[in-house]
Amino acid sequence: KGFFKGPFRIFNCLVEWWIAPFYGVVPWNYYIAHMKIHHRWHNDVDDVHTNLDLDRTNPLSFFLYAPRFVLYWTGLSPIALFVQRKEWVILQKLVSGQIAYYGVMAV
Image (cartoon, rainbow, N blue to C red; front, side):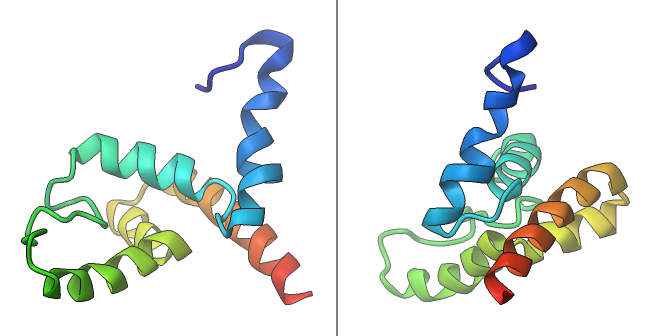
């Protein structure tokens, strides 16, 4: 629901839409993918960027985790998960941020 309430709710989008894109973050991707996937499944096997199955003391695990994280950070694996689970409202919000971000990048 966001940190800011009432007339200040507009500031809830400030980071997602005006600050994060300068750091390569797709709008709504962190908010939706992190909060609706990672916190819902607590890094379990349904979490699209889990590291539960990896040995973090083994440097080779990084090479297994890197592509998984790239798919998460670009929004592709969250889209696939939301389509599979038929969570259309969340998917629509995520895709709207991707269209805006990748559209601006293409221009």
